[in-house]
Length: 255
Length: 250
Image (cartoon, rainbow over the protein chains, first blue to last red):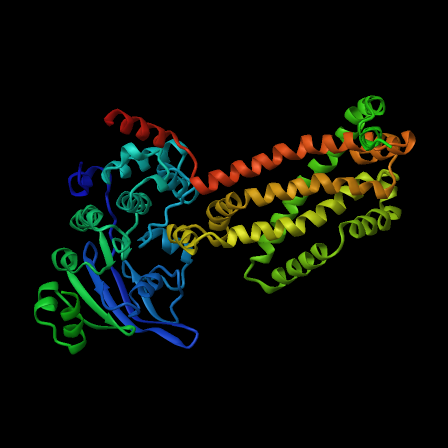
């Protein structure tokens, strides 16, 4: 199976962009879920966001591509503020992968990828199929193109979801606990695909409970708790010399 | 008195059935199918409009859909058909004369739309939130995400309920006879009833009943087929290939 790194120059010329979140606040009614989050991810780098359930990690990702509108703060993509532009156009530049894959079950694997290419990118049917097959090849599932998502394993579904997002040529990729719903034996394949993508130079924010992945792949790790980034830094430093008591406690529970 | 011969005289008079059969086929069946098919199409389209309005984030679209559904689902069908079919005919007779069909179809469709709208709404609402979220994350607008991703899945899930509603429409189409039909406009029930009155036995009505069953029974089997496919998943070429492969290994 060709890895993304092997084929990157020919097939996936990323226009990876930097992403800066500053002072992001978001509330559901009176419940303040994000209380001023700052996170800077330089182009081509990977940031892992860790933290306990309910700390606001998933909400932060949804605020980043404006599936949820932030109440305050600024989002800069490639140095340019995007909070006042059309959110649909912003989302076309940011790929997102979900915990439960969210493939379209009534479409085949190939159609899952070609549908947005045709309807949003306005590719011809032939062009969309060609582009989709390149992505399926990269995730090692070319032979499954006519299967329905329901007939694939969770790991295969997630790889299709990654292919679908990558086919849109995003500048940033967001991963929301992409392996949390997978059986243990399927986790590795998805994580190694994500690691390949990181080393190929994609800008990524990865919300994860996989501490091993965060430690090996991330350029920086941010620990979130109660709607703020409590501590952030290089993974080695964060995992071996945590400063804040909350992070120390969290690590002692998960490691 | 022989009970069997009395019953057979009343229901199984072959002569009066034979006499009415050509008219039943050429006039009654055709008219019933026209009434039912037209109401199914119009009722489904209107039902989708009602469902989408009912799911709207805008209150001024949601409320009319709610009120519409309450009214047309809450009234007896015969009352709605008479109110619309007779009440509006002084206005519409300028356009198509005294023909009761257009208003009959309109009334049947308005009633069906209230039920079908609720069927569609429940189906669309049953689609996981993640589907619209994934569509939007790819860059689809809310509207195109709904129409391309969410609504097709919702409709699939309610196909059995939808076909049940079509069966109800086939049967309810007989109610247009209350609007007064010319000889050529009579549908299955009315032809059966007229012949029954003329011959003094119910065999023609029984024949009409058999015609209804010929239309509705295949539809109920269609419901069962959709239902089974929904529960067990749809067979795909992929699965068949895998089964063959496994069979080889055995």
